[in-house]
Length: 287
Ligand code: PMP
Image 1 (cartoon, rainbow, N blue to C red):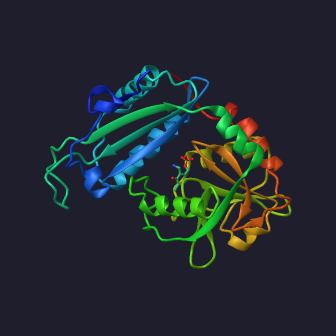
Image 2 (cartoon, helix red, strand yellow):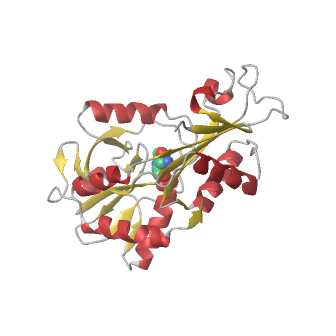
Image 3 (cartoon, helix red, strand yellow):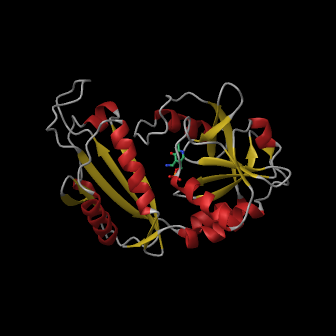
């Protein structure tokens, strides 16, 4: 079955799906995106993802290509046409196609909307939950508006590749004061030696992950003690558990940081109990 992508009003086979050579997403990374999980034919946390999309668009003074109701119809249609039961959809909006010029294009320039979807075998995530992953730390080198989910991901691409080249799976940004920021595509959590669940505040310096927000709901329902505060790379190394949250991995245990083993080197129970409760607590929307 060939995959189908939505591009500016049309559902096209991937081989024919394309945007203009002067699309501002291509030329300036002048665009924003969302990635949303689909599990058991249900879209996870759609409202929060579309709320964040609206925020990213408005922070960049970019128009939305369509209203929420219409966008939800298209998202569902893309998922149906690709027969996704477990997987993701990817949605990108750019400031449109216009003759190359840094200034914003004319106000009547239509934004570009691309939506793709793919199935993902759930056993891939399960394996990560069982074994945990290894990460490296990298110096924070991104702009100070990473709270906007922009498609300008070059530092993240380089950090991830640096991790792979070092024999690890992912990278965590550390600022110049030794504070843990976030992963290259996830938020970071630790469980302290005395059992507190800690994640850094999301007011600035990181993306406010949708999974992070829902995990805060999960933690409340499990009556876990949560602290939203900064923590250092040293705190992370001394933690009982370290894990990532993201829409693509839910809650992935980290067992090694820069070659140093976390706790006993095995995934922890806080991460697994959060994962077990997550889907029940998250908002679910039928395809
Ligand atoms: N931080 C960054 C830099 C990310 O790219 C992502 C994934 N989009 C996240 C955090 C996690 O966000 P979410 O839970 O919404 O997937």
